[in-house]
Length: 161
Ligand SMILES: Cc1cc2nc3c(=O)[nH]c(=O)nc-3n(C[C@H](O)[C@H](O)[C@H](O)COP(=O)(O)O)c2cc1C
Image (cartoon, rainbow, N blue to C red; front, side, top):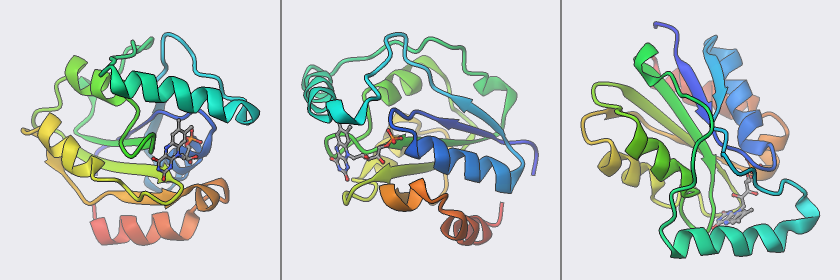
């Protein structure tokens, strides 16, 4: 496999942990999707973040991405995010609208607290119709905190990329 990119958005650090594990096991490059306006990562302020994220979802917001994502440099791109309000954070819409994933292989993964992927892998199929979307990996938050090493290994073995 050519060098892949593991791209992730994470506020509390669990999707980041899963991303790091995937990058480690695949020897891929790792990059964060950085919001222009940072989210409050203090877990004691969960309710405020929940309210803020709900407003973004309800208003169909497109939070700005601060960094350039070198999509053109990779054929295979893992894309990871947490579940927010039963879908992915709105910044993931920004990503798909701002960058062209045609001809790329996308491998989604996400962290969650019970919603699994919440249908987001299917949404990615619609947002990037000319990309090949491989089977994704939903990782429960606690498991992601612990590294998710075994499940990531099993999943990668099955993907056989
Ligand atoms: C605003 C907000 C909304 C969330 N909504 C959901 C949800 O709908 N379903 C779910 O399973 N988990 C939900 N969660 C839990 C997160 O998906 C989970 O904590 C995840 O591991 C956070 O990823 P991060 O550490 O990379 O930020 C929500 C968390 C936040 C902060």
